[in-house]
Image (cartoon, rainbow, N blue to C red; front, side, top):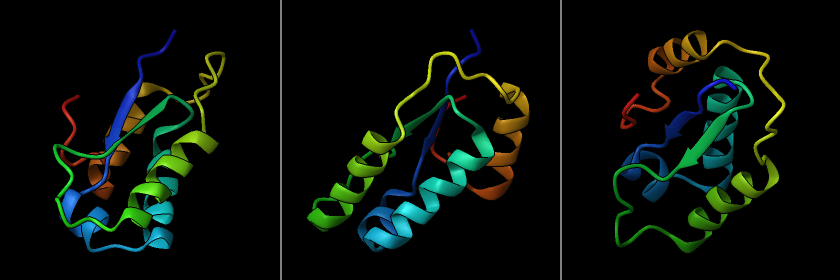
Length: 94
C-alpha cells in the first residue's frame, strides 16, 4: 500500500482569511496534485477567529473525499513534489 500524503492549508491565509469556496478550491487542487491518498489537515493550528463556515467547508470536503484504500494511481513522490511546488502542504512534515 502506498503511503498517505498529508496536505494542509495555511491556517491564516486560507482558513481564517479565506472563504468556503476558496477553501474547497485549494483543497481540490491539493487533492488533484497528491492523488487519492491525500489526508486533509487543518495545518499546525486553527486561529481562534476562524469563521465557523470555513471549518465546515474543510470538514465537508474531507467527508466528501474519503480515502479509497485500493486507489494508488499516483506515485507518492510525484504528488509530494507537485504539492510542495504549488504551496499545498507547506506546513506538513513529509
